[in-house]
Image (cartoon, rainbow, N blue to C red; front, top):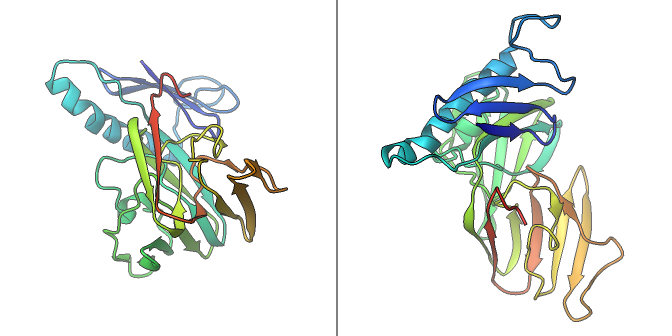
Length: 256
């Protein structure tokens, strides 16, 4: 049995990895929306959609191991990210095992524009809700990358997929990089997310305005703003003086 926890809503989802069947969903009040009782029998549309996406991801994650006649050790889950009107600097925290195309990740039924920065320039993808069509919808937003997501009205995007495990590598170019943690974990950037601290660097987080954090390798200390905590689904800018690898080995059963 696999227990999946949504960090933001604190909801819990039990999945039988053999049958790929959702056993129960527990909301923040501890009730079971799909069972008989005071809360009724009907699942919400959002819960049903999350179940369908989750089971599809679980099917992909377990297919290869089933063929090899071994049990799956993949951790499959979902993360809800709230989008506010205007610009949001976010990431895709899970690998959907289908290419992580923005047209799949941001199927929210609302007009949206995604800006991804790489090589000193922005790549752009957009969805027009009136015409129900994407422009550059095949653009990829993989775990470890970041993007500005522009939207007119508040919305929520649900990322469904597999936790990236094993040896992970995020290659940083000299100068500015729009990045995120490949591992979907909330924590201090260096202390818990293992960002390399053997160079000086500057971090810019965004929430309607920028907050700056700077690490000085010579004095081995942060500026007065201290060390940033990065949340699941959050992206940020980092400026480094030379190309650098952000490498980390992660095991969901031993997340240190």
